[in-house]
Image 1 (tube, rainbow, N blue to C red):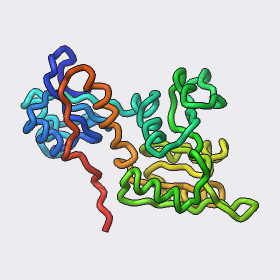
Image 2 (image 1 turned 90 degrees about the vertical axis):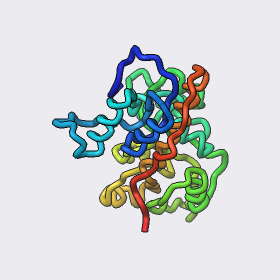
Image 3 (image 1 turned 180 degrees about the vertical axis):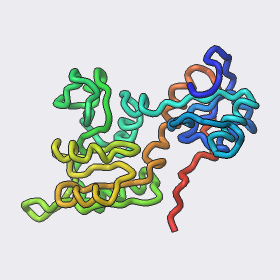
Image 4 (image 1 turned 135 degrees about the horizontal axis):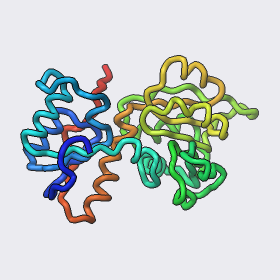
Length: 249
């Protein structure tokens, strides 16, 4: 909870990936008294609140209109049914497991989606229903996630000269730190966001690294929130102002 009183009654909720001035203005227009976001509004402390930064403008507007702001972030990244399991489901990945369990009790050897019930952690690794060419996998990512761009390294050639994709690892958001773990666990492809040049360079010849827009990789957080909140009987709206800040020329 970043802004507001946890004891307040809530009448309607606006769901978003990021909390921007446009999003909080939308909440005002819709009469929402709570914004639920994936990314936190406040990563660092504000030294002044006088409208000189987007974060300060959001705080001012939210307080003025009595709008609370709650952000999930890493709790949604690591929980069963969260960002990464939803991303895996969207891409049709089966028999998946946590790529990097958050505690020693998490057993990376467990297989099958049911095995996630006792685990938390970051990333997912699993199998496609059937092998596909790397080009077909890129098309699947583009058509399913509607990403604004895809940057990638080519998959390493196998002994038969083919480079089909069977095992896929992924981590929504900035997950480059787990490239080596995806390689160690035998993934053909690792899908994430925000990879740097040298991370592409290091992955080349070891794994196909697929890098997509950060916002695109996590925007389905809004649908997760909707699925949780709707049964509570509270009206909720997916923000129409929420979008990636990155444009491609």
